[in-house]
Image 1 (tube, rainbow, N blue to C red):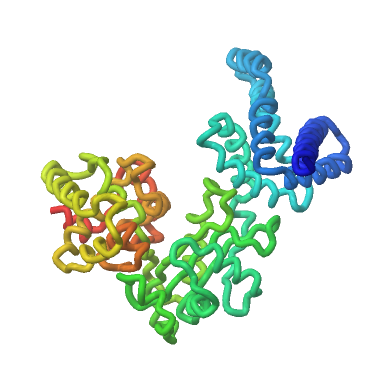
Image 2: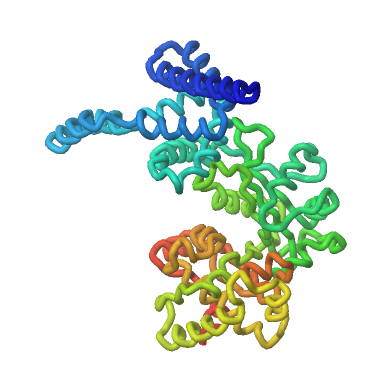
Length: 437
């Protein structure tokens, strides 16, 4: 009996909290005074943070239903502008067409912690988009505003090292998404003199890295990840010996900023910073995973006919079908996949399959195409080299039979490569193209 009463009381308090939040949102959009607006914003954000996940979903659904533009007003002004073409009518149209949600989010952002709460709010929202398509309206508004507030012009680029605050370094360990950092000793190796770690920060989220990149300073382009991660491989490299900067890990720290483009600007700014420090530095590349390769081999998705010749397509498709039987989807053990990847006779086949998969990434659907490839190729990189047996860890085997790829960032060709990718073509080195013949 007591437990039922307690649950009923908690449910009523939650219902009241949600009601008060919505009332605060309504008042926030109507009150004109700055001081009362900030007070309401603080109260509203506190009420939101205290909601249960179920009540947060109810709040999101209400935002999608009640905070939309006035359809009739938009229609009338749109018709007026279509006839007049006047600047003022266009201004009026833009004002009426903007969802009141956007102004609500702006006013919630008036208080110092508002931006951080809105980022967390979007992180919670993203979990519900598949089941509740109407919430895409709310997500579109939040992403639009966050893209403006987190414009790279507002961000600071910082180089982190072993002397950086421990709390900040702990966040780097926690957020590393590509190659897990196994404690402090592992992190220290990644901060040695032949390594660099850069992160973006925003003044509204102090001591919270948004995205970071790990860089190896080398004499030549790397072909395997193990030597870069080996704790015992630290070397003292003279500045004049640094010829290559290899970006071997890029990790996003804020899920709420998904779709807010930060990584491409980060790579360009890091390259500029490193060039100043190392005048001998000529090559900027990655050593990247191919997380979609095994899934594509095991799927029924065929290789697109473009951009290959008919002969290449037929040959590669036969090879793909043969390997799809070998990998047998997710049921194949890592040990079995490892035995396939380690055999030298399979290296050429794995290279050809990986290269064709990446070369066709513009023609593949989002559910099949490799997200890492799309990120780098859209940023203007060139598909430079496929490295079989480059990552024989369980994760590397499960993702790509151990293969990794070097994307090359030629700073003089980034724009043209990006334009080619948008037009449907992947700029590819001759060595990769030759694997298709």
